[in-house]
Image 1 (spheres, one colour):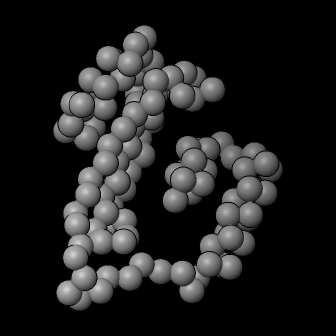
Image 2 (cartoon, helix red, strand yellow):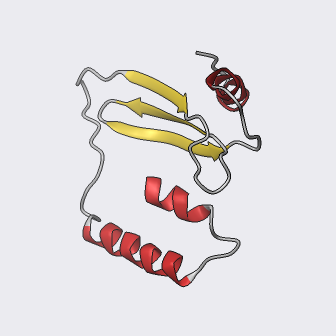
Image 3 (tube, one colour):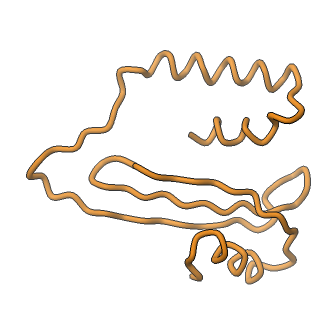
Amino acid sequence: MYASSLHARFMHCPTSKHYQTAKRVLRYIKGTLDYGLEYVKGKNAMLIGLCDSDWGGSIEDSKSTSGYAFFFGSGVFSWASVTQNYVVLSTVEAKYIRSHYTGHLA
């Protein structure tokens, strides 16, 4: 999931390095096709939602990344990772902008 979202950032101008690493990700996916998520009826399942953001984590442009993931039982069913449009100067600003994308200010 992380590798795919990271590659998506470079779709507008990919290089041969991006092509090589994309092939590596596809080889990994091909080798893990039998993996899966299991939802067992009657087993105690809990809904969990997580969100977070970093502060200037991108080396290229110092922009922050916000993301969330929702889990039910043993598997994730929804996730997102978004590079923020602004360069922030503090962790408070990063959290404020994250709340715009995720609806949570924590």
